[in-house]
Amino acid sequence: MPDPARANRAYRNVARVVRPPMLAMTRRDWRGAENYPTDRGFIAAANHMTNIDPITFAHYLYDHGIAPRILAKSSLFTVPVLGKILTATGQIPVHRNTSDAGRSLDAAVAALEAGECVAVFPEGTLTRQPDLWPMAGKTGVARLALTTRAPVIPAAQWGPQDLLGHYEKLLKPFPPKRVTIVAGPPVDLDDLYDRPLDNATLREATERVMAAITVLLEEIRGEKAPAERFDMRRAKAADNGASVDPTQPPSSGTAPGAAPGGEPAP
Image (cartoon, rainbow, N blue to C red):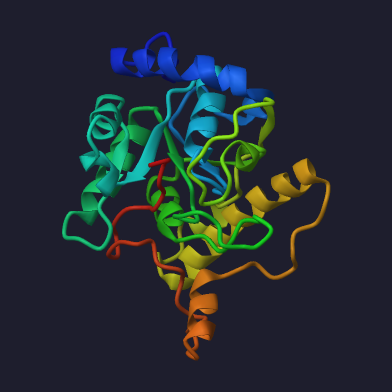
């Protein structure tokens, strides 16, 4: 398993720049890292509330000797400076709804086969749930997990939204904010591996991942999530006076057989 001491030079250099301000701006409660495998590649899946989530989650993983390969929307790789950093540190671009979509899955599969950590935010974007509970996930994480049989380690984070508000652009660095991240045991997908990779299977696997993340977040917050998971497709359809076919899974944002969704901070 790659660790910071053996990560590429660009990753180490970025960590040297990013970690000091993160250490100054946060009070960290890191738990559950013993659930991450040390002998094989794995998928680290977390909830997504604010655009600083990828940095706090990467900080958590890096502090436990893991240099994550984060799935990020491809448009970020064209942003000056940021794009070069993402490329140099080995992050994986997600080409949504394009003919290049399959390349993202191929890159993620290759990373897992090489024993690396692929980090994803299964919701594919910031949650629209009003109280910041995880919403329905996209099926990309399920496709990646069922294709590779790599373990999916769920994690929940709470506190980054106090550092950078939901859809806000200005940091609130002081006073330092408490950021809690807790990882749990692997999501049980064993009974799904030999099933056809159809909509029902993808939906089931995706919901298991989101349920595991939600349980961890309930433990952190000390309260129960709503009984019904917020579904952005249904909310948009309701706003437009339409309906959603419940047999169809939330889109992965790519063509069938293509890449999982997920995006880091712009």
